[in-house]
Amino acid sequence: MKTIRIVDILKKSENYLQSEVNVKGWVRTKRGNSAVNFIALNDGSIVHSLQIVADVAAFDPELLKKVTTGACLSVTGTLVSSMGKGQTVEIQAKYIEVLGTADPEKYPLQKKGHSMEFLREIAHLRFRTNYFGCVMRLRHAMAFAIHQYFNDRGFVYLHTPLITGSDTEGAGEMFQVTTLDMENLPRTPEGKVDYSKDFFGKLTSLTVSGQLNGELGAMALGKIYTFGPTFRAENSNTPRHLAEFWMIEPEMAFYEIEDNMDLAEDFIRYLVNYALEHNADDLQFLNDMFDKTLLERLQSVDKEAFARLSYTEAIDILLKSGHNFEVPVEWGMDLQSEHERFLVEQHCRKPVILTDYPEAIKAFYMKQNDDGKTVRGMDILFPKIGEIIGGSEREADLDKLLRVIRSRHMKEDVLDWYLDTRRFGTAPHSGFGLGFERLLLFVTGMANIRDVIPFPRTPQNADF
Ligand code: 4AD
Ligand code: MG
Image 1 (spheres, rainbow, N blue to C red):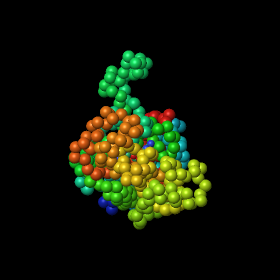
Image 2 (image 1 turned 90 degrees about the horizontal axis):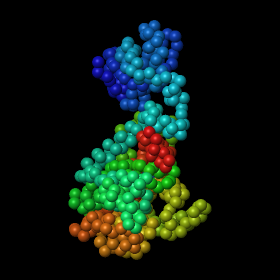
Image 3 (image 1 turned 180 degrees about the vertical axis):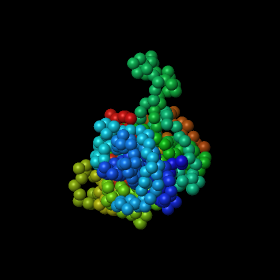
Image 4 (image 1 turned 45 degrees about the vertical axis):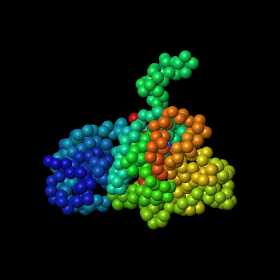
C-alpha cells in the first residue's frame, strides 16, 4: 500500500476519509488507558502530528510496549473523523509495525519542552522537535524562493569557488586550506613556509565571499547570483555569527547604488511574503510557541518602505539622541550593535538601509564618492538582528581601485585576474550579500543563529 504523507492527510482529508491508508513516522507521544492508546505520529511533512488510535485488545501487548516516544512506525488503518479535541481526523489502526524502537531510558527527546541550549547539545536529533521541523521547512522554503526570485528575473546562478587565493573582504579572517604536513613544513631558504610545495602551489583558503568571482560573471552575463557556503574565522561567539554560513550574492552590471537598494528591498519583501504564503502552519506554530510578535513583524515588511539614511545622517541622529551609548559615537567609527539597534528599533522603527560609509571602514572594492571620504556601500539593518545585507556599488575605475589596493598594501598580483574587469570593458555595477542565516533569524523569530542552521560551526565547536 502506498504511504501517504501526513500533510496530505491533514490538508486533504476529504480525499481519504473512510478509506484505508498507510502512514510512516516517528512517535511524539503515546497516552491512553488499558482499553485504548492514542499515538501522536509525526513524519516531518507538517508541524502537526496525526493521531493514531489503537484498541489495546486488538494488538500484541509486546508490540504496544515498543511504541514509545521516538520509535518509528508504519501504521495502516482507516481514516475517520475524530470526536476528540485537537484534531479533526485520526487513524483507527489495523496494523502497526515498529520499524525502529527508541529505548525510553536513552532517547533524549521525551515529551516535555526542552531548552534551545539543550537541543543544541543534541543537534543531530533536534530535527525531531516541532521547533526545528518548522525552522528546517522554512529554511528549505527560503532557499527555494531565492532561486525562484532570481530565475524569474533573468539572473544566472553562478557557482563560485570555495577554495580561493584571495581575501575579498580583506579582513584576514580566512581558514587556510592545505595538505602540507603541519608537523614537518617545507621551508624556503629564508625560513618561511614554502607554499609552492602545497597542493595548489600557493597559499589558499576557504572563501569569505564569492563576490570577486561574481563580478567577473556579471561583467559578461549581466546579472548573476551566487548561493553557497562561506567561511569566516572571526572569533566572535555571538548569537549572530557562524564560522560557516550561507550567503546569497547577486551582482548586476549597469546597476548603480539606488538600483542595488531597490533590488535588495524587493528581494527581502518577496522572501518574507513567500514564507507567509507557503509556510503559514510553521509560522503560526513559531508565533504561538516562541515569539508572539513574529507574524506581526513579518507582515509589517510589506506595509512600508525601508528607511534610507546615509552614514553621516545616522551619526547625526545618534549624536543628537542624547542616548548614553557604551561606545561613544563619532564620525568614522564602525557602528556597534547598540548604535544599529537604536537606529532601527527606536529611531526609525523599521528596517534601515545605511549608505555612504567612511572609506576606511569598508572593503577596497567600493565605489569612491566625490567627497574623497566616503564610499558607496550599503548595509541593511533589521530589528533584533542588525546587519542582514552588506553590499555596494563597485569602483569601476581601474586607477582609483589600484590606488586603494596599494594604499592598503594588498597583494596586487593575487588580484590581477579581478582587475581585468576594470581593464577590459569596465562599467558601473553593483551587488550585495545577504546572510542566509540572518534572514532566517528574522523569518523564524529564533534568537540564536545556531538554531537556524542544521549543524552549526562556531569557535570551539564542530560537532556532528
Ligand atoms: O557584509 P559582508 O561581509 O559582505 C560581503 O561579504 C560582500 N562581499 C557581499 C557582496 O557585496 N557581494 O557579508 C554579507 C552578509 C552580512 O550582511 C551578514 O548578513 C552575513 O553576510 N554575515 C554573516 N552571517 C553569519 N555569520 C557571520 N560570521 C557573518 N558574516 C557576515
Ligand atoms: Mg558587512
